Length: 414
Image (cartoon, rainbow, N blue to C red):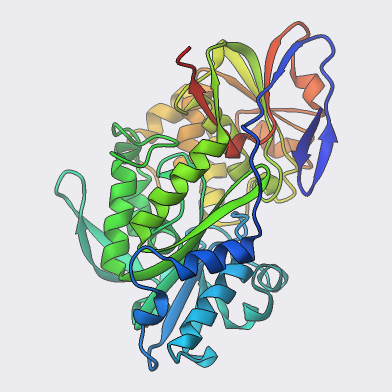
C-alpha cells in the first residue's frame, strides 16, 4: 500500500499482519477557483462588495504553510470582489496568520500567494496589541490581542481551511484571524489545560464546543467582516463557502464530515496513521496524527496498542515559538506521566501540543518512522524506526489510515 510522505509517497508492506485499510467514502474533488467564485456569488449574508466602501483599508488574513489552503485562489476571488466595491490594490494588506508558528519564507509566500505575495507580511504575535475583552465560558474576562495591521484596517477579511481540529472541532472561520493574527493571551486561554479538559472540546465537534464558541466571540470582537473558506478530503478540495464566519464553518463542517467519516467497531493492536505534506514537515504537526486517532470521537486502539506515524520531519521538532516550547517540554520530561501531571498546572502558549501528546503517551506507544531527524523523535518520549514494518509487531491486527488528518473515525451503530 502507498502512504503519503512529504510531497511523495512511500510503499508499505505488512505481510505478517492482518491489515485493514480505512478508506473514506469516495468523493469528487472540485476546481478550487470555480468553487470560490460560486461561494462569493452566493454568500452567507451580504456579498463582500456591499460590506466595504471604496476608501476602506482592507486587511486579508490568510493561512500559513501548515495548511494546504489554495490561498492564491481565495485571495484572487476576494480581491476581485473588493475591486467591484472600488477598493484598489494599494488599499489591501495581507497578513499571514502564523499564530506562534514560524514565519514563512519569501519563497513560500510566492508559492502560496502568487502575484499577491508582495502584499504579504508575516504576523508577529509579540507585536499584537489589546483591542478589548470577551466573556469566557464561565463569565471570565479574556483579553483579545490583534496584529496592528489588522487592528487598524477598516475591514477585515480572511481565508481558511475547514478541516478536523483537535480542540476547535474543525478549523477555519474566525480561527484564522483570532488565533492566526492574534496574541499570546487568547492562545494561552484557549490552549490551556482548563479549556482542553472542558466537556465538548473534541476533534470533530463544533456545536457545544466551548473552544469554538470562544473563537467565534473573538471573531466578532475583531470585526471579521467576511471570510472565504474551503474544505477538503483526500481526493482534494470539496467545496467553498463565503460570508459570515459561523455559517461558513457550519456549512463546510457538514460537507467535510460526509466525506471523511469512517465507521468501525473493531479494536486494533496498531494503527498506521499517514500524514504527508505540509503537516509532516515537523514533529509538532506530525503528532496530530497520533492525537487525532487516540483522542477522537472513537478510539479503535486496543489497550497498550501503538500508533505508527511515517513522517519526513525535515524541520525537526519545528522552528516556531510554539514548536520549540513543545520540544522543550517533551525533551526535558522524565516520562509521559510526569509530563502530564506537571503540565496540568499550566504551560506557555504553543506548548499545548506537548500536553495532548503526553495524554496519548500515557496509554500508547507512538512510533515515528522514515524520518530525517530520528534523534528528535527519541528525545521527545517517542520511538524512531527506519520503516513502518520495523515499528509493527508481526501478527498484529493493523488499521491503516492513509490520511489520518482528513479522516474521522466514528463508532459504527450497526
